[in-house]
Length: 223
Image 1 (tube, rainbow, N blue to C red):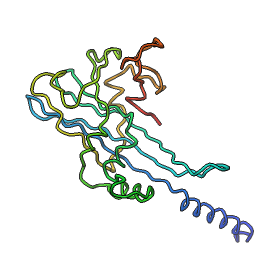
Image 2: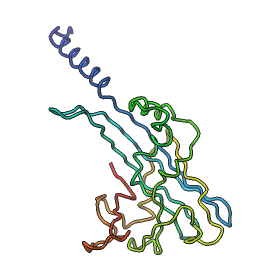
Image 3: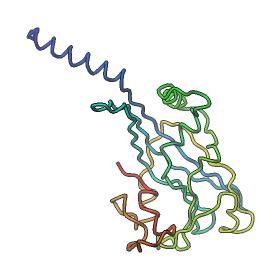
Image 4: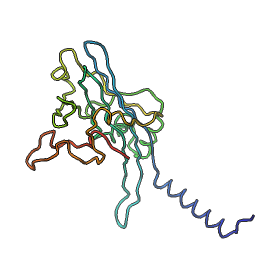
């Protein structure tokens, strides 16, 4: 059966427009693995989580300039530092880890080239995330009660977990591994499906404490 020429021309036009669109407004995808490395009196312990990143260039509308769209999905990496005591790395700034680690502006200023550098790093050894870009670290006095959350200073884990506990590294790797799913839900069953829910059920407008400002979306971003 011969396909009519008008249909072939239309299909070719659509394909051509799509191809030019992808050149003008490219999309970049990768999986990134965050690992916490902690030294304890009983030896080194680690915890990791793999998240998904998609960065797209968006055309400007009317007089607006083109913009960048970022979709980040994944869950907080965590490590059991002591029996029943966990350290969590929040995902709040997870979208910037890869560019800061594998393609900082000091190396390449062109945005598209930076994204390609990240994609090209797939399979390379993990790198230490720059100290000023580390995620916020938190723990819970009682892991069944989200309101008991407290921030942990990276340089002073011993103040929370006891003498001899030290954060050795926060590392990132661009990987082919599947996105981590279910580990955080199993550990924190109180996490809600709606990511914007607050850890504290009822927030006083004048309460700016950590438990009142942290949200479920700081621990997990769902597709």
